[in-house]
Image (cartoon, rainbow, N blue to C red; front, side, top):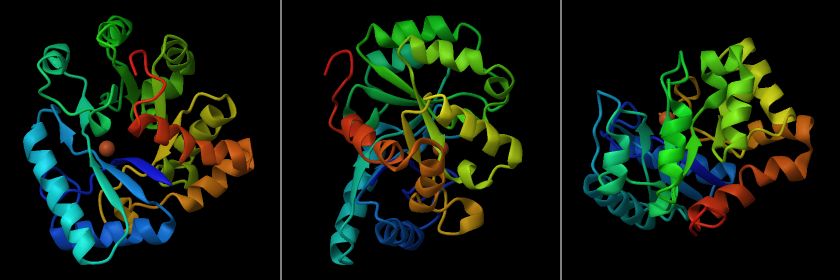
Length: 243
Ligand SMILES: [Fe+2]
């Protein structure tokens, strides 16, 4: 499996707080059947502003440590980009990292709302040849109230990522039900852990249990596509407007 959303790099955001925890998270992921992780520290969210160089440096160190510890897992560079006012400018100037430096960008909204003018922003990103993947859509309260907003954005070419823990009730029963509904209506492109720590309560990097949950709704093959086929296309830069 491939996990395209993980706060696995140490001391870059509210994710892993040491190299030891990063390595423990990698070991857990490996044991769960994950072979590739895209490291996606928060950026442009008003608290964290991680630049591409510092992310790539830590990815390099983590891959080296994985080798030394005989953990057969690959970590790729990326970021989770908050939808800020200067996002278009930052993409143009290559000041933010897309997922594995492809034409896919992981975009985060505020949890309570869908930003005004989102259609226009989506269009501006798309004409640069970039495909946005909206992170943890099931946890957005406005999408929960108005799912047609998400369906409309997906129809216009955006993609949606679901948090694995939501399927097992990690964010409450409303979010779980909404996650199930999104899956059943074919609105989800990939499932990722959005891991922040090595403890279950802090969202650890596990996908297999949640894939089993998704399988009950959409069948095993379709569920596996969300953690294998589609994430593979993302990290290989396939299927974008300019690939
Ligand atoms: Fe995240």
